Image (cartoon, helix red, strand yellow):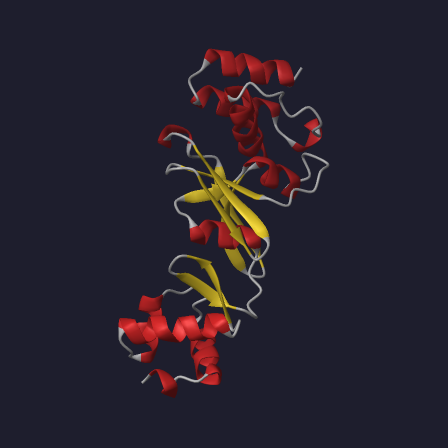
Length: 199
C-alpha cells in the first residue's frame, strides 16, 4: 500500500487538505493506510529530504514556507511567542533575535529545527496572557503584545538575577500597560524592578 503513495500524490494531497504540519495519524486518514505504513512512508520521505521532521511525531513538507512563529506555536502548545524575539519583532529592542522565544504553562523545552532554536520558558497560568494573533503569509500565530513581551523577558532576568533589558525604545511600549502586566506576577520586588527600569 505504501508504494502506491508516490511523492507527487503525497505532495498534492497534503497541499489539497491544507495540512501544513502533519502527523503519522494524519497520513493514515488522508491516504487510508495503516499506522505502520504511514510511519514507513514518512521515514522514507525523511531520508529523501522530501519532508522535514519538526519534532517527534510532527512533520512538514520540505518545500513549505512557514513563518517561524507559526511553527513555534504548533510544535509546543499551549504557548505564545514572547520575550526577546517578540521585542525584536515589534522593534522595541534594536537587536535581531535569531532564537524563537516563547512562553508556556508546561515544562520548559528547547528544539533545534531547520537550523533554528525554538525555546520555551515556563510561566504560571495566572500570567499566561497579554497575547493576540498576528499573521504572516496568511498564517496566524499567537504572540505577546509589546508590553507583555517586555514584562515576560524582564521577569526571567529578574528571577535569574541578570541585568534588565536596558536598550529599548520607550516610544514602542505603553508604560502604564507594562506596569499593569507586572502586577499580575504578584511580586512587589519585581514591580519595583520594572518601575525603576521605566524611569
